[in-house]
Image 1 (cartoon, helix red, strand yellow):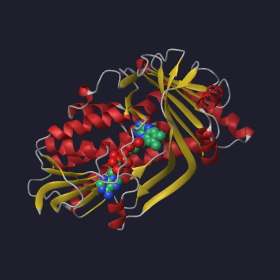
Image 2 (cartoon, protein in one colour; image 1 turned 90 degrees about the vertical axis):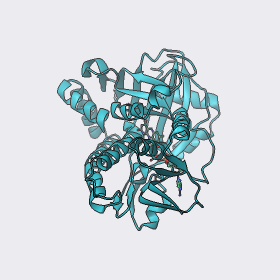
Image 3 (cartoon, helix red, strand yellow; image 1 turned 180 degrees about the horizontal axis):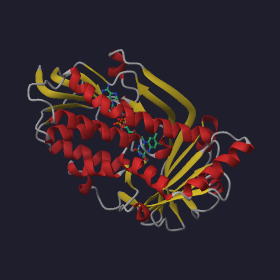
Length: 370
Ligand SMILES: Cc1cc2nc3c(=O)[nH]c(=O)nc-3n(C[C@H](O)[C@H](O)[C@H](O)COP(=O)(O)OP(=O)(O)OC[C@H]3O[C@@H](n4cnc5c(N)ncnc54)[C@H](O)[C@@H]3O)c2cc1C
């Protein structure tokens, strides 16, 4: 039996970030990856907010990312389902350097894995290794088996939608603009990216009802590109696929308990939100920052697995996570109805918010800090 301060289950972005942050705080960590994880390359690119970038920078991971694997979003253009209804956010108006950074998921995972390899206090263990630790952190993602084994209920609402992700190039330069179309019932986002073609690449996230998503996945590349250009009204130029397409089923979920004596949940193991606001991983990384903060500020006599200590973490994280879930779910519901009166109302609402800079500033601040 080996002794550690913390046993981290799950080596996704949240699990690895947690292991690195705890090791930097001087704790010994056993990190246990998933033996069953398929070695497929993730085609997604994540929109990371300022707080997430700050955390990754502190872990010496952000500045080590290779050139072209993170692109700053300078403006965001969100289009309603009537032509004239839109809302624009600009980094310049919000007085920030960028609204978000679009980051290659696979590259970020690789960089974290390499940082873990060189971290002196982290031991990567396999499922068969007997481990004794004061605290077990469950970072196993939405299907966490260890969460279920602790009797925690994962209260989930399945949207019946899937998100298709892929990489694209475009004939028109992106100019750092993230574009999103609410198309009742689907939501389509093109996130500016600089690989493979600097200034002319995008990461696609297109969420649609299951059958429609499956039908689009079954199309050949040229037909898919044509559907995509029609859906974006050719506003982003001529789009070409440069990767495989992959799809994820979408849900909103939250765990009935976030911690108990000696264990705690982080990331998608604790909560899942719809990706339309690009906030799931940002919430998970905010969990990491909160837990490490609570641990490093604890009273010297308090054990790492102390129930009261872990409840401080849960109290800090439950409210902002719940609020983000409400916002994404509310937006999705608002734009999923096709009744003409509702359509008119929501499109007027978008245009109205667009003319209210203080409200836009408030919305942006929430998204930047999650
Ligand atoms: C299409 C799409 C686009 C998205 N875009 C964004 C975005 O732009 N911005 C954003 O912030 N978020 C985004 N998200 C959300 C983001 O993907 C997730 O919130 C994030 O990946 C969660 O990370 P995690 O480490 O908690 O979980 P996961 O990434 O699921 O990692 C969990 C890890 O634990 C492992 N594991 C599972 N079971 C075990 C076990 N028993 N033992 C050991 N290991 C185990 C798994 O194999 C995996 O490696 C998006 C999601 C989707 C679907």
